[in-house]
Every structure is written in structure tokens, then in C-alpha cells.
Length: 169
Image 1 (spheres, rainbow, N blue to C red):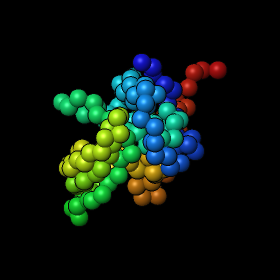
Image 2: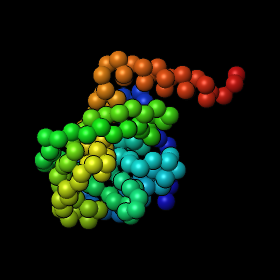
Image 3: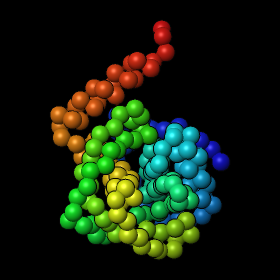
Image 4: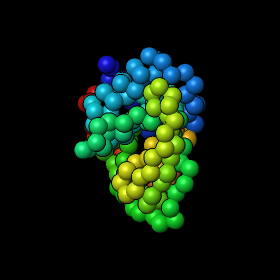
């Protein structure tokens, strides 16, 4: 399909809540295919529609060895008390990563591209990925899960990376 341009941090669209999908049609399937192509070009393991400037509740995860999966209107309905740490980053903020604390296990509901409801339980890395992407749909960019000091250092490092990679003038 199409690789779409990514919304880059600190674009304010990354802090907006996405709207629920209400129309399950060819346009939605095309958007999901574009998200997968964009994710693979980035490269990354997860992407939401807001990452490409579309304020809809759609997530695509491409976690090996599974085939890519699309989640429409995902909602976490339960999370464990146990917590884990995973290294996270974002295709909207390439080049920087940090450890984020997440629930070790989650249960979520979602719809597929035809609107059929499903539920899924996940633990470990997959659970962290679901939480990360659903946060993004809710307008919570991953660095908001860090302490203020870590967040400020990471933003400074990201800003420096941008300057270092800028074309010479």
C-alpha cells in the first residue's frame, strides 16, 4: 500500500486522544495496510493511527514470530498487580529508549477490521506493547511514564540527535 509520513515528537497530535472507529470498510482496511507498511519502513514493532496523523483507535503490532495483528478500538479491561520493566521507544521519537514500568499481564478487548469483537490476554513483552500503544491512543506519549529527570534527559538527547542528523547548511 503506502508508507505514510510519521508524526514526530513533540507534535501536539501525539498528546490527543484518538476517536473510536465506527465505520468498518475498505478505507479502514487500507489505513491498516498503510500502518503496517509504515511500521516496517520505520522500522518498528508497533504503530497507531495517531503516529501518522489519523486520530482513530487503531493499532498494528508486528511481533515476531507472529503474523502482524491489527487491533481496532482496543481497551485494557484488566491488568495484573505485578509490574515489569521493558525498554521502550517510539517511531515518532527515533534514536532514544528508556526502561518503562508496565503491568506484567493484561486482558484487553478489541475489534478486528470487520468489527467483530475479540478479547486477548497477554503477558511480558506483548503486554508491555499493548499498554504502550493504547497509551498512545489515549494521548499519553511513552516518555510521560518516566520520571521528570529521565524525561528531560531523554528529550535533550533526542534534540541533540536531531541537530546532529540535520543536513548541513
